[in-house]
Length: 132
Image (cartoon, rainbow, N blue to C red; front, side):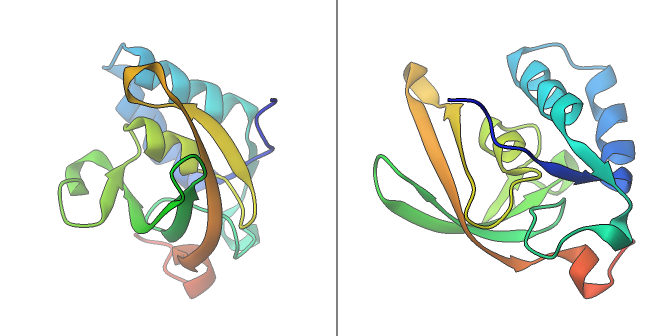
C-alpha cells in the first residue's frame, strides 16, 4: 500500500529539520522520508483536519481496534501523559495525516500497524496558536 498524501506546515518543517541533523537511525530516516513526500503549506493555510505539531489527535490501530488520544510533540516535551514524540515511529506516522486517513507503519517486533485518524481534537493552526 502506498503511503497517503500528507500536508505539513512550513513552520513545523523548519522546527523538525534541525532535530534530524544530529541523529542517524531508522526512525530519523522514516521521518525524513515523510517530510520529503509532504506538501508543505504556510501555517495559516493548514486545513483544520490535519495533524500538525502540538495537535491532539484521536486515532485507532486497526489490527487491535485500540483507540487513543495523543498529542504530537517535540522531543523535549515528550514523556508527559498522552504525548508522543515526533521522533517516535508512531509520531512520525501521524504527522501530516488528515481525519479519515490511515497509514501502515512498522511497529515493534516487525509487526505492521495500520493507524487511522478518527479526529483532530485540537490543532494549533486552526486555533490561531502559531507560536506553539
